Image (cartoon, rainbow, N blue to C red; front, side, top):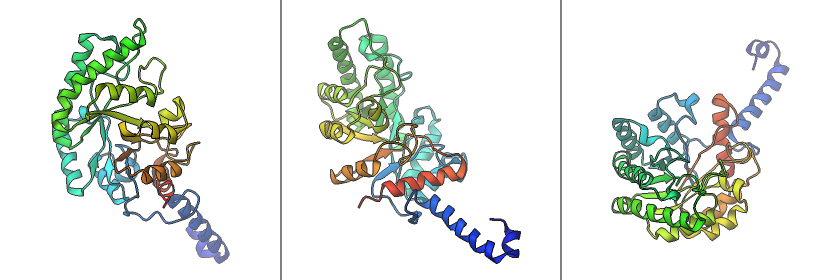
Length: 309
């Protein structure tokens, strides 16, 4: 609003005030104009990540976590947690405990999504994966996280698919033996990034989890990737329900916050709520708009999509 014009022209002031109210509404609710209710916990347990609110809270992740809490979120996720210094991991874990927040997934370090493919059955690849499992135990102790993302790597195109499946199951069983005594769950994530990646669909991942047969090996159902690879989201979640331990969010196209693409997240969140899902939903997506305005839009999008009751 132009302050000098406001003082000189009451008519313009009135119109400017109305415009200001419209802008406020756009930052608090995507379409309805409902207040964002800062600090009120959401119906579902959404988890922002480092950098999502850096313009509002600063670049320090601890300050961002406090901001995240103040907006009503009660969890975070941090793909890069394994790469943080141990002292920083502890600080994050301590702050989460102080605020009564939960830690979502961190990525189990095995050298990259397509690297060290477990489908090949090579011992050197398995050894790198198992080293990552042992490291995940220590990371978990410091930050409090009990969920570690695992991507088994690329296809081994020179081997029959069933042999690859058996190789992956065998390797994951060995990883589960390390993680299970500590209550840590590796969540397998099928991805859409490239057709070279071995893990592609929820049905395939369900089969792998059944083969591993461990409470420490479950599915990470990333709804952005699964919308691209298979669609029919609610039905496919139903089919794989008993092996799903974690969800991630991202609208398609664009991989930004809900309400920016084709996925009806309000209906999906309502379905998950009715199914009794009490776990974390990781906000693994970008912001559709830059700066503080974009960050407020993310919060507003979740307020709108969460208003399913």
